[in-house]
Length: 272
Ligand SMILES: [Zn+2]
Image 1 (tube, helix red, strand yellow):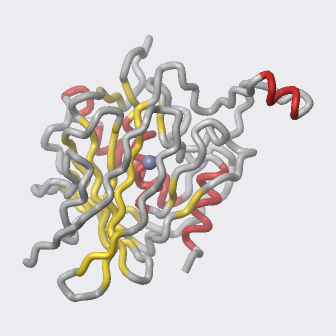
Image 2 (cartoon, rainbow, N blue to C red; image 1 turned 90 degrees about the vertical axis):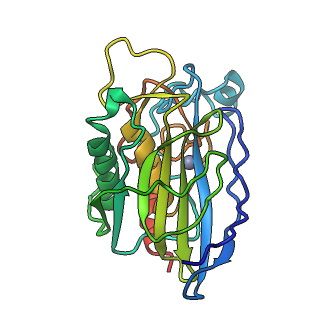
């Protein structure tokens, strides 16, 4: 198989609370000379002070808006989303490589990843919106190959397999997805690397959760939404949506989609 040289723009690693700007797609040549693009997307670790699902209105905001209430859950009122240029059409089959899975989640990670895929496939949400999306994220079995995502956030190639697995990522990066799509915007493959060095994970939140301990399912929902064609929204203004660039530890409130995530998924499906 011919190797491809992919000069992917590495995602800039930013402090939590800032928006990660998505790089433009980089065209490469695939084996059959059809044009193929690849884009990498990160999710960043947030601070323990971050409160996803809550909007903290500053005193100035409150005044300007005639009394905006702080701590309002905007999960279902915020319709904000941002789109990439691809979508999943029909069925995306993904594989899981358990090599390097942290012991704490070794037995439950596959289920959490599966749940997240199903959430995105059907549009499962926190707002009572119909779960009528018709995409399928199908678990295709154990992979022996690694995700083609390097520890420096380079997408290292496309073997045609969509592999989710574990490895080292730069500081602040919880997980990273490289998505390959064709000139029609249809996803060909999507590889996902989850950090197993700097961060620890849970699939059921422990009592007294503290420190840099993150919900795997929430993170996987976010990453699968990238695969589905969603980009990031604003960390502060859209804090309740799953597509904020950063996640806070010890939070499971965004496993299912918010109204903006849902609207984005709907829009992505009708882009082409
Ligand atoms: Zn992201």
